[in-house]
Image (cartoon, rainbow, N blue to C red; front, side):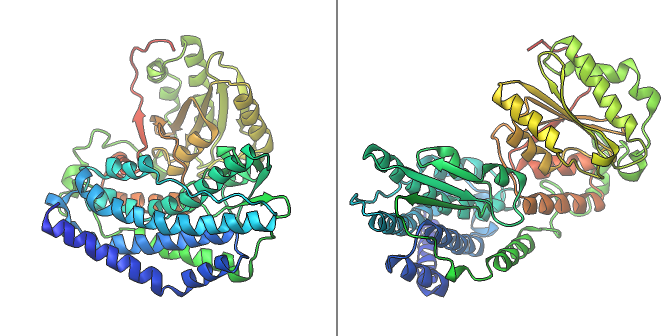
Amino acid sequence: MDESTEELKANMEKAFAERVEADQKLTALVDHLNSGKGTYVTAEEYAYQTGKVLSGVFREQITEEKLPEGVFTKEFVQETIEPLLKDDHKIVSTMAAVAQENINTAAGVHIQPQKADFNQDRADGFATKMDGKTMDEAGWMLGSPVSNFSQSVVDETMRKNGEVLAKAGKAATIRREAEAKCCDWCLSKAGSYDATNREAYQRHRECRCVIEMHLGGSIKRQTDWKHNAWEERKARIENRLQEEKRYDKMPVGIKEGEVRELATGEKEYGVRYGKDALIPDEEYIKSDEYRRKFDELQISESVRDIVCEYARKAILDNAGTKKESMYLLDADTGGILGRIDRPEDKRESGVSYTPEFKEALRESQKNGVRTIAIHNHGEGYPPSLDDFSKMAENKYHIALAVGANSQVYRYYNEQGLLFSQEECEAVGLTVSQYVRQGVDPDRAHTDVYKSLDVRYTILKGGESNEE
C-alpha cells in the first residue's frame, strides 16, 4: 500500500469513528439496546444509519483525483473500502448481538447470542464491480450498497441465531412487515417465516422492510424512537435522489462538444423514439422480415411464431398511444398463461399487474414453468430499470419489450438484481437528461445500465438453436 492510499485509509477510519461517536441518533439507539428494550428493529435502524455515515465518509474522501490513474482497482478497494466495511461490521454485529440477548432474556432462554461472520464474498463484490471503472461509472457503489451491506449484518445475525435456537429446540419465528408505500416485491415477501429460512432476509437496495424475530414471550417492538418514521424516510429518499442525480455529467466516454457528432454515428441512430414512434409501420410489423427478428430466440420455431404474433398484437392494439399490454407465455409450448390487455387494465408508459396476472405468475413459478414475458413500449424506448427488476422478481426465462418503432429488445438480469421505485425514477431521469443533450437513446440506456450490471440486446434476426 503506497503512502497516499495509507493516508486515505487512516483519514477515513478516523472520520468514521468520530462521526459514529458524535451521532446523537446512533447514541440513542445504542442506549435503547443496552437498556434491554431494543430488538432487531432497533439494531436494523442502527445498521442503516451507520451505513449512511460510512457512505458519507466514502463519498467525501474518495475523489477521482485519489483513484489510481483515475479508476478504481481491486487493490485500491481492498485497501481502502474493505477495512471500513470491517469496522462497520464490527460495531453493527455487536449491537445486533445485544438485540438477540434482549430477545433471549425476555423469553427466558439462556443461550449465548452469536455474532454474524464478516461476509467476505459480499465485500469482494465491491472490488469486482468497481474494478477498472471511473467514479462516474462506479461511484453509486459508495451509496446505497454500503447501507445494504450494513443492514445485512443484522439480518445474518438474526438468521445465524435462528439456526442455533432451532438446534436447541427453541422455535423462533421471523415476522416481516412491508413499510408504507413499498414496492410489490416487498409486499410479496411480507409474512411469517421460520427463522432459518433465508428468504425472510432478502432485501433490495434501500429496502426498509421491518424484519423481526419472535421467540416465545419475547418483548414487543419499541417504536417511540421511530416517531414520524415515514416522514423521515421520505426525506432520506429526497436527499439520496439529489445526491445521485448527476445531471451535469456526460455519459461514460463522452466529452462535452462531442455529443452531436457521436450521436449521428450511433448504430441505432435514426430510429424513431418518443411521440414520433407512436404510429407503427403496420405493413412492416406484419412482414416476414419483422418475424425473422424472433429467430434469435432459443426456443422452438412454433413458439417463436406465437411470440411474434403476441408482439404484433401488443403493438397494433395500442397504436397511437402510450398504453401497454403484456402477455405471459409458456416457453416450451407457447401456451398463453396470463394477459393484461383489457382496456380498463392498461395504463400509459407502464404495466399494472392485475390479480389474475399475479396468480398466473404464482402458478407458473409453483409448477416450474419457464415463461416468456412480452410487453410493448409505445414510444419505442429500450427496457426501463423497472423492467429489469420485474424480470428478476418474476423469474422470466425470456423477457421482451417491443417498440412501436419496430425495435425488439430482449433484456437480461443475470444477477437477479432488484431496484426500488426511487432508483428506477432516478435512473430514468438520468437517461432522459443524456437524451436531451443529444445522445442517441440506445447509447444513453446502454451506458447507464453498464454500471448497474443489467443489459439488453436488440434482435435483428438470424439463426438460433432450439433450447
